[in-house]
Length: 337
Image (cartoon, rainbow, N blue to C red; front, side):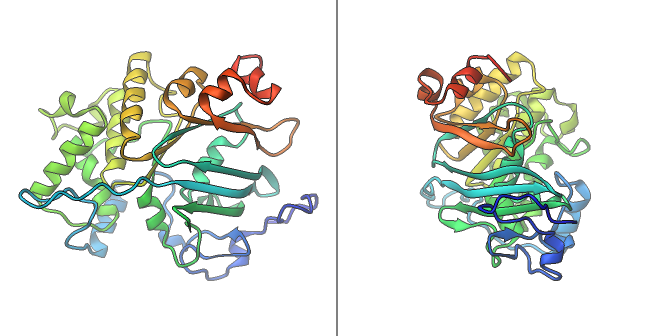
């Protein structure tokens, strides 16, 4: 990959990630430019049933602190909610720069909505937050992402740690269609190397499906295929699957874009309830949805072929009621986009 010839002096020039680190350790990075993990640690997109089986073969541990307590044991106090901070994030695909020095704090226990026209880098920024951007061979990245003060790209941190602590719900529901509803929920345990008994799994499935607002609808057919659910139910099943490993942050990339209004309303209610236990970052093109579900908002914009930047961010009510920038006012009121 060639290096761009016209990158501003104030922005670190992107470099081919594989050439920077011929044999990087998992999660290795240097000088603010991050390299992808070795090929063996990378999956293309959401996990597959085959990857779960492979994870099972690697080995498991007997217990894990994120599993629900056994009957009769002392309840564990809820861990403090986590914050996520992005600092000076710039991103490239080959020679094309898509983000320019984006910084944003996503506060603990709040829903942060990322809004802006298509092509301004919102989804790229979201994928950077849990190290999915590096799956693209031509991807380049500069900056830092800190989860509770720790850089998730720091060379000693494993890729699986980032994915376990920062979950992702995709735009299109992607349950494992041949797996049962029950097995879809517990699939994340195998991917993260956790072994649990049947009773513990039963408790986990009920808790996660309840949190995702799906338990009452499926409790009598847990062994039915996940692919047999409606679109809205499948999306909530994916949310339950993400919650099973108790992420500290949950990322959502337009989770309602393919759903009908009724399913969208249920997902929004689920989001409102989930923020009591997990910090949420959501990309949405629906301004009314952003106003309904988020406490903080960030407006991304890329104009006239320039990289995406954050024009304005802050309290959602303030941004929709009295934005500081005229461009924000025009966008949230539907004058462009």
